[in-house]
Structures are given as C-alpha cells and as structure tokens.
Length: 211
Image (cartoon, rainbow, N blue to C red; front, side, top):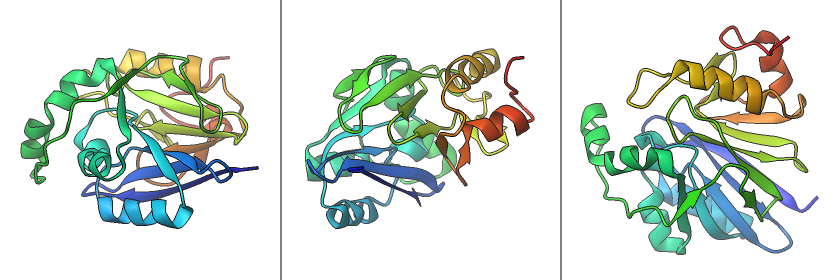
C-alpha cells in the first residue's frame, strides 16, 4: 500500500496532528496542525511529501495555531467546514481565554462539504457536528483509518459546553455517521491514544451503538 501516515502530539494542548500522504505520488495532507510548525515541517521533509492541503477537523485554537506558518512554508490551502468560520475568526479571543500566544491566521481557502472526496488516500469528508457546528471526520477506507478530531475519544467524547457545542448533535453524529463505518477501523482522536470504532461502539460509556 502506498499510503503512509504518522500522527503525533503538537502545540500547547498536545493535539494529535496527522500527516497522510502517498509515497508514490509524493502528495499529502496535514490534519490539525495545532502548533510546533518546525516539528511538523521536519516530519514532512522526512516523509518526502508535498503538502497540498491543511485540513482541520474543527476550529478550536489547539487544532489550528500552526496553520498560518505552514501555509507560508508550503503554499498548501487551508480547509475547514463553514460551520466553524465564526470560531476561526475568534482565534485571538480563544488565545486570550487560554493564555496562549496569538498568531494571526489567513482566512480558510476552501470550505469542506459532507461526503467531499479527498484525492490523496481515496478518503472522504464526514460532517460530524456536535463538539462544534463544523466538526469534520475523515475516513480512509483503503487504509482503514478515521481521523475524528475531538468528536470521539478512547472511552469518551468531545465537550459540548463551548460556543456552538450541541450534545444531541454529537450523539447523532457518532451513532449515525461514525458507528456506521467499519468496526475495525483505527480512530485517531484529537488528543490522547487511538482506538477503534468497534471498541467505542461496545465500551464507550457516553455513546453506545444503536441496537
């Protein structure tokens, strides 16, 4: 299989940043560049990838802080679901709230849509609102991989008490859109260890699979 990926924690809140690419074509994406742009760029160089897009699961500060720096270095377009545009525009206020240094960000270059294909890795965008209105997950069937952001965690789910959060939407997104995928798929979460869809369907105390 030519698809390669690597996930590692970055930034002040240690979000999981994922680099995914095609080792044959040399094209790739970065998901959730939340900080430490030099570390991310080093990994890109090691993997020998040309980054075409910076793709965000949502627009909380810990997932987006390095987007401007990496865009300047690579020219890659910044991608986000439009429902989180208000959070992107609030980046300075978010940084003040959490005491994190503020770095200006350019406006997103592309608005992601539900079921939009991702050319590299034959992936697909899945709109999974709840943690935020524009939360997205990204499923790569051939690689059996789901990048879930802060929608789903090992044994837990994303918070819904921030602006735009909605607990009913979150449960619906997980039950109807994530739990309908291959149970054996690996889930890269927004923070912390990975899990599988099947494990969460059976063991997650917050959202169980529908009977």
